[in-house]
Structures are given as C-alpha cells and as structure tokens.
Amino acid sequence: MRISLLTYSTKPRGGVVHTLALAEALARAGEDVTVWTLARGGDQAFFRPVDPRVTVQAVPFPPDENETVGERVLRSISTLGNAFHGSYDVIHAQDCITANAVPGKIRTVHHLDHFTTPELAACHERALLEPTARVCVSSSVASELLDGWGLSATVIPNGVDSERFSSAVPDSGRGDFVLAVGGIEPRKGTLDLVAAMAQVQAVRPDVQLVIAGGETLFDYRDYRASVDALVSSLGVRLSMLGPVPDDELPGLVASCTAFAFPSTAEGFGLAAMEALAASRPVVVRDLPVLREVFSDSVRYATDAASLAAGLLADLSGAVDPARTARGLALARAHSWDDAAASHLALYRSLLAEGLPVGSES
Image (cartoon, rainbow, N blue to C red; front, side, top):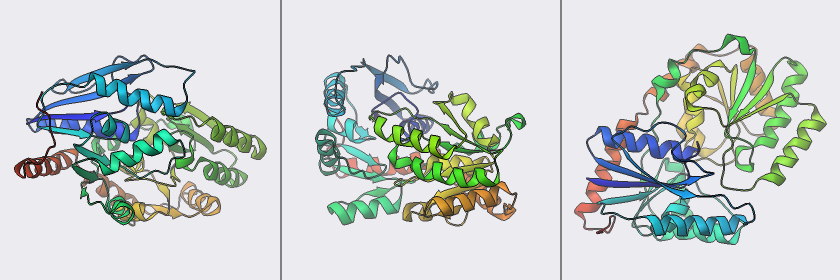
C-alpha cells in the first residue's frame, strides 16, 4: 500500500512525533510510506533521524518575520499544497494545516482547539468537515467531535516507545526537579504550573522547575510575558531548556523527581505516557481525556493548589510502588506497531468501500 502521511513541521511537537512513529511502524509492516512536511526555520530534515524505509519529502518554508499568524497559516497551506504530488492509495493528514493543503482524505484529530485568529479558525473548521474519514487518539476527543460537529471518528490510541524511556539512565547530578515538556503556552497550563511551583518551593526551596520544548507555529509572546511576570513576582526558580535534542530527552525525563502535565486540553498525553515509561511519578490536570487514558496510574489536579499538593506528595517520596508499576505497564501496553495495524485495518476498510482517500497522480 502506498501511504502518504502529512505533518506541518519538522520540529518536535506531539503531532510530529506521532507522525514519524506511525510512519516507521507502517514501514516495518511492509508498507510504502512517504511523510510530507514543511521544513520550517531553515531545517533540512526532521528533528531526529527517520527510519530509511520511510521516504521524507521536506518542503522548504523560509521564515517571514513580518507576517501575521493568519498569513503564516495561509502560506503554510498553499506552500505544501502546491508542492504535494505523487500517486498514493492513502493520504492521511495529521493536523488542520496539512488537511487544508491536501483536502478531502483522512485526518487525525489529535485534540480540538478554539482559535480566535480568523484564518486559523477557518482552517480548523474545514479540516474537521471536509475529510472523507477521521481518526481520534482517544474516545473523549471522538465524543467531543461527535457532540460538537455530529462527526464520527475511528479511535486509535497513540503508541509509545516505552523501551526508549524505561531503559534511559537518570542523571543523579541534576538534583531534585519537577519537569514539564511542551514549552510555555496557554494549552500547557504554564501559569498554573508556575503558581503551583511557588507553593512547592515554599516547602522545598531546593526543587527547581524545568520546562523543556516549545517549538510552535503560533505566537505566544503575550502569554510568555505573563508567565515571565508571574515567575518574577513569585520568585520561582525556573530553568527553560527550549527544544531538547531527541537523544537526550529520555535521560532528562528519567532524571526528574516528578513530572507535571497541567494541560488544559489534550488528545492523549504522550509526554506524560513517556514519563510513566521512565517510571516517574506524574501529576496531570483532571480532564476526562486524561482520566480515560491514565486511569489510576497518575495523580490528578484541578488547580494550582492541588497541583502543588500532588507534586509535594511525590517529591516527599510518598510514591506508591503499585502506581509506578501500573504506569509502566500502561505505557508498555501502547505499541506503535499495534497502532499501525489498526490504521492499516481502517485504510483497507475505506479502500474496500471505494471511498476517496488517495490520489491518482
């Protein structure tokens, strides 16, 4: 089967990580897989090496510091759409930008957003309504899609490279720290995390907050300014690492004393699942989707105060070994090869129905 997966960036974002892992698993299953992407910021390739069995088509996307977010979205759509070519049995977009660039095929809805930028809001809506078929990585997001838009989706959970994180060697010289992965942005709940860490550091002044990641298409300067102001006013000890090299990420996750995941919206929570694979205690926002995915393998928090309480409990060493074992078992139960098999079953079903999910030229 000739399969094209499309993603909007070469940077280490959750949807991009998903796309590459799925592509490699499909290739291991013997399929002919091509990943199309926009090569942002002068990149020539993805943030990590890709299995050579996967063909990569990286379309140059030079930066333009003068354009607005809306203009960047429209240029992203047109640049990828104009470059895309080839004959594929299946074309599968992993985000709203690529679903607009090559419309009317298969789309994975990782999570649902509520944008205020007109161009982005329109992109988001079209990418839900126009595809022939939709995939969601959790039942919660599929239910939200059905309730809000009347659209059905096939649920295929994420995989996780659990061995990569479970075998990582912690760096004992780092000391105690709370780790969050995903950068500073509204959806990641950074303001609540900073407020929580002020309470944590009042009890444990030796514990630093470390935030990794942060590559994004969007402009969060105003939110980051609010976070910086809160950090300054509360005196929170914060280390911002920015994007971490892919081969260093497992060791960083394995080294943290506790992992914080206070996102306000998620589709699955891959970064938290990777922390469980590294046998780290995890505190997440109490969202229906995270209850569905993580069950009793994590602590839940509803606000900054309960987030601080959960982190302090884990930092004190009051980590239930049974919870750690459940978390590791949960991570190991999510295989990218299983996810690929489920995708292939869906592709074959859609093709057998004669639905337009590919291209002819």
